[in-house]
Picture (cartoon, rainbow over the protein chains, first blue to last red):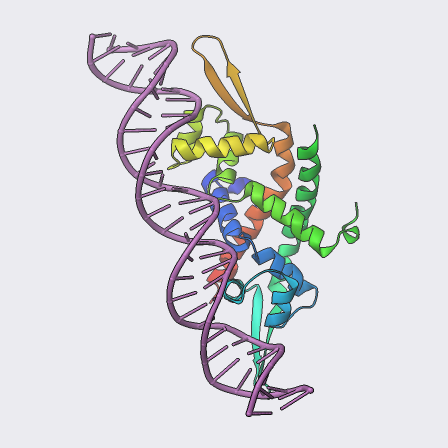
Amino acid sequence: MKDKELTIDQKIKYVQDTLFVISGKWKLPILIAMNQGCYRFRDIQRSVPPITTRVLSRELKDLEQNKLVIRTIYEASPKTVEYTVSPYCKSLKPLVDEMIKWGQNHRRKISEK
Amino acid sequence: MKDKELTIDQKIKYVQDTLFVISGKWKLPILIAMNQGCYRFRDIQRSVPPITTRVLSRELKDLEQNKLVIRTIYEASPKTVEYTVSPYCKSLKPLVDEMIKWGQNHRRKISEK
DNA sequence: GATACCAGTAACCTATAGGATACCAATATG
DNA sequence: CATATTGGTATCCTATAGGTTACTGGTATC
């Protein structure tokens, strides 16, 4: 599992896999909002404006397929749907933290004369 | 500079900044190839197939604007152009390493039944 | 002098991401 | 009974990323 065992092509492939899962305008904002405690569809929508229902619906499905989000239906009346971040989603934290750190530093770097 | 000092909106902004710089189909493959020692336009193109000259040209300009790549023209005849990764580019390494790691693990995760 | 390599640019096209708007059935509220 | 909220879906549209093909001026090689 050491880095050295990976070829360049493998590295590129894995990086592209990762990008594919988390990139796009909304995926990480959605996950960050959900980590703040939003778990209902409309709550998430309101906390990540101005996403439309159509796009949010698609994004949540993608995230669910990638096992980052869990969709639960409670049949009790009124039927409710709950979205939660999966335990596996926590594995993204180091990556997201790196992205926050790098983005913050990069903004400084670029605004240097 | 502690994480706690950032609001959710700031975190989202920084993450989106980072995504904006490194996402897309080619940026990281190009940087990875350049780190392997490719520094001429055609060398880079050949090592990241099948990128076209048009796209490679645009990508290199983006990377240059973000100070990740340095373009040097040697006026000696024949005039040559050299692209190198900047020292600043090394700051991306922890992030890229995380992406490689996460992507590798994610592939296993998703292929679980 | 023809051919090939270099670092690109120009013009055009396509596929996809994302947005706008409208709508749905089910339930709750005034 | 009218209106609002829930979790969405259906159509349609637009903007952009990326691809295709052709071409350029400069140099080097056969």
